[in-house]
Image (cartoon, rainbow, N blue to C red):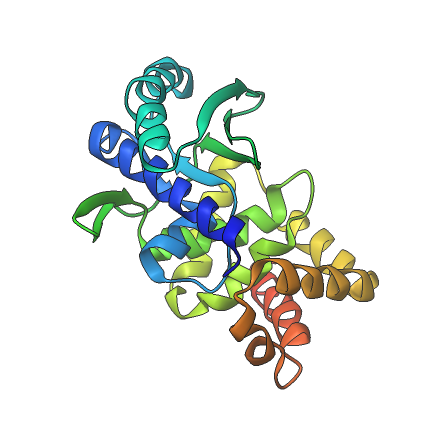
Length: 245
């Protein structure tokens, strides 16, 4: 782990701990960093994602206040970095936190979205802190939905889907179809994505290779590439999408 990644993950943990301890009952930790923190995922993630079941706008001002009161002084004391934020919210809440000193500047986006959930929230503990999160099934199902619903296709969603495919339930495809209805997705979205993955396979394989090089722990890269691993990630995504198309 290089020095900057170590600093990024220290900052991420401080952000997540601060939110969990003071706003934990309002926000569910989701996304790639959730997998990294709670499930020891081999994929590194820069942004931190939360699911908010209520009004997104109502959480923004209290969260910014929390960062200024608790997080920023803690970061300065623990890591010796100054802090600022930029509100980049559009379709959902995006608070880009900046941490800097004379040597470096690190930006960590905190995204707050709403995802369809079939299960009640769960609690997980790490290092003496209790984190509220979506269930394992809701998490992996959200990756399937994200593949179809993002404006710009995110290769990292395919990687997460592959890494945590053991969390897919026998009834997950039925649950995904119900969730698609609630957010206005149709089977045609799955069909369109399958055709894109087939037509532009070489392009997506290159992007998967890039994600592995940049975001998978170094000692795990050879293992994930064994036995046509990159192609297996792409094939599993298509196989999953065909079950709902």
